[in-house]
Structure formats: C-alpha cells, structure tokens
Image (cartoon, one colour):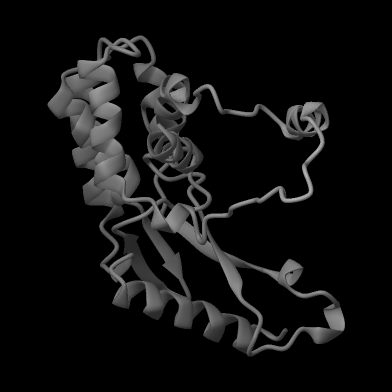
Length: 226
C-alpha cells in the first residue's frame, strides 16, 4: 500500500470516529494541560508512595498509526485496498499521562480477575482438554467483542471501579473517591494525539496503545460477566 492510500484510510477512520463521538479535533494544548496536570498530581498525590513514578518525565502528544487487519483474509492474494481495514493504535509513550497510567493500571489489577479468568493460552488449552467429551447435540462456541477497546463505556467502567474500591472495599483507596474519579477520567479521556499534522482527542472508549486500556477493558468484561 502506498502512503497516500494509507493516510486516506486512517483519515476516513478518524472521520467515522468523530461522527460516532469517539474522537474530536482539537488544538495542541499539551503545554497547558501538562501544567494543570502537574498541579493536580502535586495537590492530591504528593504523599502517595508511588507519586514519583506517576510524575511525568516528558511531554509530547500521542501518535496514531494503523496496523492492517490482514488476518481477516483467507489468502493474501484476496486483499484489496477497499476491503482492507486498519486497527488504530495510539502510542502514548512519552505523553505526560503515561507514567501515571502505568502506576494506576498496576494498582487496579486485582479488579481484573474473577472465577472465570484464564491466565494464558496454556491454561485455556488445559481447561479445554480436561472437559468431558461433547455430546452429539453439543458444540463449543467462542464469542468475540467487536472493536473491544473503542467500545468500552468509560464512565460506566469508572463508576464500577469506584464501587469496587469505595463501597465493596476490594482494594484499599489511595485518595478520595472524587479525586480518583477525576484521575481516571483524565487518564482515559484526555489523550491528545496527532495524525498527518492534525491534533485529535479521544473522548470515549479506550485507546489501543495506552497502558491503562487493557486494564479498563478487562474490568468492564469482568463487570459484564458478574
């Protein structure tokens, strides 16, 4: 694929996301956002044991790129430009929220498991092997979530996390409920990224390429299973 087709594909994907409320165009406000964010961290997390790990070490917008979904085709010879789709990856390495997202992702890990969680593919393979043989009228079924990350409802997920921490006491809180909600919403919905010299902000769903996205997605799926 040539560069022109690649850019056109991703720009069409962004336009579709804007129409659905996932993205919106914005100005480059990273310097102003960084200052406000530093003040927010200092006021509310200075005494937290992982404060220094959360503090931003660099400040640059995230960068969008796309990976082609070639696995959707049975044969590479069947691939056409019109049918080929891309997976949007927003690389947040170097953004001012990256460090805090890593720390909070680790903090929330206990909420990512329930009795149905499978640790890895080897465990899944063993579970399948240990099941009794299927009857003639039975079959194994696998379900997939379409565009899982971008379809995660952020506010619903955040409210579930707050309930698990501040009501059900699953993990110990690190700050007040209001402050932690503000932090989660900042990390999840205030990501500014660039593509082709234009700035965008993701306003809903999780970004692929962010350290907190996998954790939020897993927690939401746990919520659905429960």
